[in-house]
Length: 168
Image (cartoon, rainbow, N blue to C red):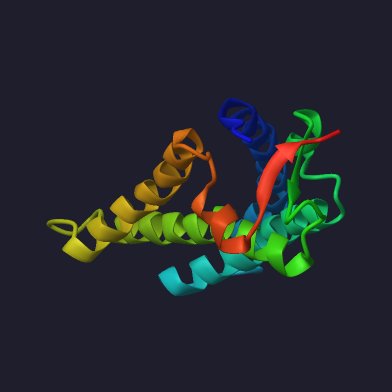
C-alpha cells in the first residue's frame, strides 16, 4: 500500500521526538564538556560518542516501538504500523530496518560533518570528504524518492522484509 505523504508526516513527528532526545543529551553533555569532565579528542572519538549517546538509543527505541506493534510515535499519530507478511515483525527485522533507515545515514552524516569541520581551515576539502558528504545526502534522498516509486517500498523495508501499512 502506497502511503508516501503519510509516511513522511510520521517521520516528521518522529524527528521531533529525536530532536527532544538530542536536546536532553546536549543539556547533559555540553556542561560536562565545558567543565572539562569529558574531553573527547579526535573525529573518531566524537563519532563514537555521538553514536553511543544519540544514534544507538534512537535506533533501539524505534526498533522496540515497531516490534511492540504500536509503531513509533509518528506512526501511531498517523495510524501506520510495520508488518512482515501480515504479522508483527521480529526485533531483528525492526532493528535492521531502523539501523538502515536511521543509523547508517546518521553515522555517515556525522562523519561528513566532522570531516568538513576538521578540514575547514585547510586550503581545500579532500575528495574523500566530498564523497562522504555526497553519500550523506544521497542515502536519505534515495529513501525519500523510493516512497514515490511504484510499490512505494523503501530499500530499508525491502532489506528487512517489512512493509508499512495503515493501522486498523
